[in-house]
Length: 152
Picture 1 (tube, rainbow, N blue to C red):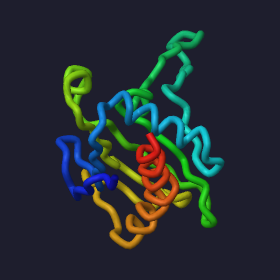
Picture 2: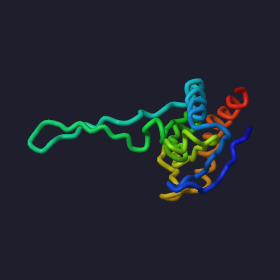
Picture 3: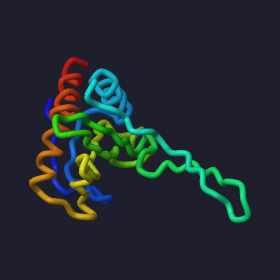
């Protein structure tokens, strides 16, 4: 089973997309399993607590999910020989779609190397740098995901 690979698709803008003949929950479970079993993959902190000073003293605490809510968007880091690379991908659709669709997909939204080189479709990117980043994303996550899904 090879995911259908699409370039530059998705309303949010994506660098590359991968489609699978399974429901989103099954895809998500398989992705989490691959991440847990690959020592080169790290899930970035889901959400972030931001503590900022208030006018007149004290602090405000804000919980910001940003692009890493752990359900729609997932941010991972991949350890490579050239350093730690950061990737954000999203599950296409929404909760309503996820419950009724027999297919699902993820889209690579952005990718950056340790030197902050990379980008997204929305901000632009250097094709050579992005090819390197995609190569690692596919070898560490996508290929392992596809192997796992074939076994199931």
